[in-house]
Image (cartoon, rainbow, N blue to C red; front, top):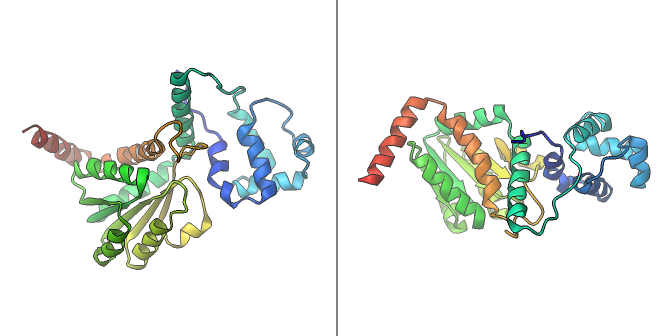
Length: 270
């Protein structure tokens, strides 16, 4: 079985919306390229009709020191070829594998531990989300409830607004919006932050503006057309990242959580 590899592609995708048109052109090349070639700054600049300085600025916006560091990591995990098979089963499984690889790149152990601590310290947790994100929020609610977390998933915008009266420093609010543009979710997080609650945003897009009202921004993997559900459920990358978070949370006082989980299962059987 092939081991997971770190890739720069999900990093590019997470900041894509902040790129200039020129930078998006560069990003599109690296995201969709399937051929190994001379990736030197000079050659790529000529190929894309841009400058080496623009490549450097693009790499820095992705979080790298410069183009040299970016291209080293890009080529290190580069795999030639793409899957254009008409085999539906293979196509779906390839999509899952791609999202799993991207999730592996985005998962940050230190961040997972920080969020796990937040969930441990707060006496009440709320999860906000609409559509597929709302369904994922319900799954999160059920899993955490089984191990003793006082949690409520909310997928109605009016109830989110009314729920603000219950928020305080003892609460944590998890907002889920894959696009990063769901106004009601972002506004609910702003309100929660103002009321003293800990705020966590799960999204596929990085934006500096989130730092003003989010204690943590947990990036999830994304794939073109994923949100419209053309290939697989948009819930998948959300739940994968939550599974990783759940594992970290479960390790905090593991014996107690195992006891609660077993008790819950027993109650369901009775």
